[in-house]
Length: 452
Image (cartoon, rainbow, N blue to C red):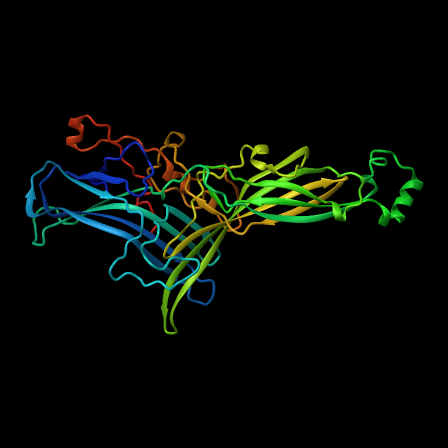
C-alpha cells in the first residue's frame, strides 16, 4: 500500500507456485528499513479473506448504494511490542500462516438469512479470488473477493518526539480452491429433439435426378404420399467440468423406424455447432430499514462464447464426441470455478445450438442445460505469465458489461491475474545470506483496489 521513505513493507517467502490453495504456508517477514530513529509501539500483521459487495438501487430518489463486507476468515499476530525508540537500521519480523480451506466464524459477524443461492453458515468452502461488476445507468453493482496480508506499525501510546503516525502495507494473495483431476465424472444427461422429414428426396430412385415440371407438380400435390423419416437429434451435456479441461459434449442421431416410411435411412449432416456458457453472478447486501430486515439481491448475467464452428459434409452417427471434431472445445483457465459464499455466488449453464440437414432441409435445435458445476482444474504454472503489480483495470475481460458477448480464448485479466507467475524480489537479510531464491506476490493490492 504505502511505500514511503521509512520503507515499511511485507516480503513473502513464496514457493515457485503462484496460486495458493488450501493448506499452503504463507511465510514472510515484515521489514522496517528507516534511515532515522523510529518510535515503535507494536508491529502487527493480519491474514484475512474478504468479500465486498455493492448494489446500487434502480428505483426511488435515493441512489445511495447498499454495501456489505463479509469476512471469510481472519487471523492476526503481534510480531513486536514495546515502547522503545528503534535506531536507524533495518528490522525484520518473520511470520507464518496457513491458508484455510473453509470459512471461519467471526464474533459479531453478520447473521445471514438462509438462501438457495448463497451460503449462510460458516465452514463452507472458500471461494476463489474473484471480481465481477455490471455498469448500469443508475450505478454499478459489483462483488470483489480477495485475500490479503495487512501489516501495521503503531506508535507508542505516549506522545513521542519521533515521527508520529502509523505505517501500513498490504499484499494480495491469489487463491483458488483445491485443484481436481483433469477429467472428473461429467455426469452426462441427455436432451433430444425429434423431427420429421417428408420428401421425394428420401426415395433413392428419385433423389439426385432432374425433375420435369410435370413431376414437380405431381410431387407437390401428392406430398402426403411421399416417403418420410422421423429422427431425433440427441445432445448429451455434462453436469461437471473443469476449467482448463475438455468440455465433454456428445451428439447423435436416432432414427424412429416405426414412424418412418422411407425405403432407406437418410443421412443427417451436421452443419453448425454454437456452444455458449451462461454465467450467473449472484450478489446480496443485508439492509436494515423501518420496515424490517431484508436482503437486497442482484444477478449479473454474462454470456461467454465457447465455440462457434461450421462443418462441411459431416454425417452424424449414433453417438459422436464433439471434442474429437473440435479440439479447442475446452473451458478457459480464466473461468472462475463455481462457488457460494455469504454475499456472493457463481453458477453456470450450457446452451448448445445445433444446425443439421436432412434431405436438403435445414433443422435448428437449441438445447439449454440444467446447470454446470465448474471445478478448478489442475494448475500448470509454466503455462501462465507474471502477475501484474496492480489490480487489473476495471471493465475489461469476460465481466465487462451485462449482455457483453466474449470469447473465452480472449485475455481475461481479472481471473488470469491470479494464475500468473510472480517475479523474484529481494528477501530479508537472513534469506540473502542463505542464498535462497525468494519470490513475492504483489498482485491486486488493496491500495489499487477500488473502495467499495
